Length: 553
Image 1 (cartoon, rainbow, N blue to C red):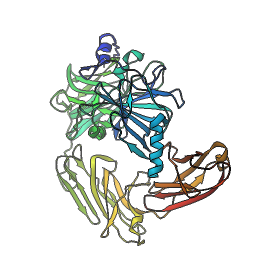
Image 2 (cartoon, rainbow, N blue to C red; image 1 turned 90 degrees about the horizontal axis):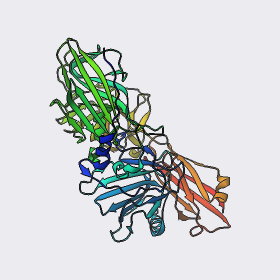
Image 3 (cartoon, one colour; image 1 turned 180 degrees about the vertical axis):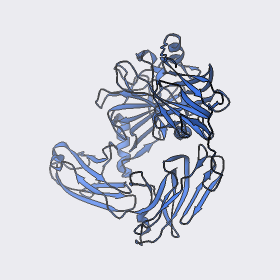
């Protein structure tokens, strides 16, 4: 048996991690707000298909807080997008660049310029790249107002920080070190063991095995295995969970793996799919994973070879960006076991370092070299229904992410519609749902690009979106027109609104709700009279709905 030990260390580690970004010493910057700093999210948290690229600053549950420049510099990019809402980029003279996302509003001349461009282009989404001398800023100057726009679940400021020389996203936390009060270490919440196919065995299985963070007995294992840990960081006085900055795995006193979440490039983002499985962080590196924050300590990509019938003593060290530390100890018990070999290679074995091509009746799939993170054996199967316009092709029972898209072609069994724009490639979920994947019709096939291996078919969308007015009797009083646009199949792709036949600036301020909103302005809509509001929404397959509404304002 063994003991679990938890140790906390701040002191010297606090100095080390708060004074540096990587190996570079940094000076503190002006914080974005003039009230105490509290985070709802930290740098590098595990997200779907990407790392969280910055810090999420809480704003007390409200919008409209003044956002300040962190140093002297200039506004270098201005955007309105459905994904990040109002976005303001600032390039500083100190070699760093920040992206302020989910703002509620721009201010001054920038606000006027953005609105003029939206009307000129007749689009909610716009982008401006000003010259460096157009909008200079000084440290502490108010540059925007915080909000809840774009893909945001609540009021906050998302602040990305990039190193100009490399273009890497880096952790902004060290730049505000003296304003962050945190003595709470990370916490381990679970372990996962990964027997390597045809080479390893753990606790009676050759597939992944989960365990509590504090197992009550040594874990029996044999052969080549990997280990992963589920862990989160915490901060004083708040209930949020955060990502862990540093994870170190030692076995019998020797470091075999280290991850340090301190920087990454945009191109590295999807490698998170290789490093993680759900919330578990793997302490080994798959052969196709090029993520720089992962470090092999034993020359085996962090994998362990259990080839002696003895105890293997394992220690995880978990550390946050301020040096607060937890240690977790557990044992593996070597137990010699016969491991069943893999099936002989065939066309369903895909190699990560080769071009892979699969051709079946009605299906063509090309997975170029480097799109997979490790070798994969497809769980290929075909399902057919007499009413389906195409077979349903299972490539994998679970989603296997690809680093870049690959080409998929599915043949149509029959074409009930002459309009080929109504067909689309659909990913079939485990519950039978269908997710739009796009594609174009070409000589009896639907051709498209997919980002993961799973189950696919061809579907048809002839149903127009729905458009529902939200409290229309309040529009005149509040000066806000709100419409709920929904589409169950291919999704809302475009929308446009007019008032009395003239373009009206409808937008999607918050992409979680998805509502289309127009804030009435007397500069564009005459007050004190009846108006005709007309809004058209179109889905990705070209189906349209137009709503017409009377308004007195």
